[in-house]
Amino acid sequence: MKVVDLRSDTVTLPTPAMRQAMYEAEVGDDVMGEDPTINRLESLAAEMMGKEAALFVASGTMGNLVSILTHCQRGDEVIMGDRAHTFFFEVGAASVFGGLQVHTVPNELDGMLDPRNVLDAIRGGDIHFPPTGLVCLENTQNLCGGCALSPEQMDSVCLPVKERGIPVHLDGARIFNAAVALDVDVKELTSNVDSVMLCLSKGLCAPVGSMVAGSVEFVHRARRQRKMVGGGMRQAGILAAAGIVALTEMVDRLADDHRNARVLAEGLRDLKGISLNLHGVQTNMVFFNLVADGVTPLELSAALQSEGIKVGHHAGNLFRAVMHDGIEEEDVQRVVETFRRILSGKA
Ligand code: TLP
Image (cartoon, rainbow, N blue to C red):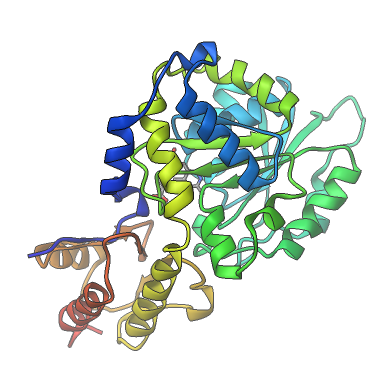
């Protein structure tokens, strides 16, 4: 039985082309700037993001941390959404390592931050206040259903914030999902942020790695922060080789994941016992609530698992299913039918 693992797009495996590229990768000491494959990946990522330079890091969490540490001074405040991955899922790293205070503003249903709330959260010069060092955005917004923010939405926050002299960092772990869903060049989503982190190891299938892109001066300083958190990785061109394949060959196929997410959402929405907002399904994620009386979330997860289906169970009755490479439409149909069977008579 094929296991259909929808817990995350982080479960994707490197493609045969990636394994080949890794095998053949030319490598050197990257801390000395001498790994040709990493240098190639960094130039490629910078060019794709419309930035001057980029830096290869071990993970999305490291990329966000390195970016935040580079923008901020100890004691600064960082403004971000109350559903931001950086707030929820990064172990409080900005506070622990940066001595920074996080100031959350509410994420709207689609992940948007109301620009007025962000501007109101920026501190004045009163000596009681911590200085505002940074605003963080996220696109797609994981905990808001994987919704994609349009270039206009991004700019409506970025431009007034920058006018106030505050830099903007974008957690673009899935920025290519946003670009594909909106059918825009990814640069339109990054043009007004000062730094962007993007992940190679989610829907793009690389085994390891993320990129941080920004100005030459920013990336120069970020390199020092990366070294400080232990991210100077020597002959990591062997990983960067897969990253190059991720950026050059794997972006367009994200549209298949988005189509499959839609199919799953439409199938689940019709089932008694499931509550799902179809409008919120814009990229590769499907969030839904279990509202059946006769089955608990744990029982549902166990029943699915015994049928070879894994979905993510978040807090309470909330579940997440994420589409990715290797998940075909027939798998999605099987998932819907399995849910139907398990829930029948339980609603
Ligand atoms: N997200 C993971 C888990 O951490 C929840 C997932 O399965 O979705 N930014 C965003 C928006 C992310 O979704 C993630 C990973 C990260 C940053 C962190 O990336 P990694 O896992 O590479 O540190």
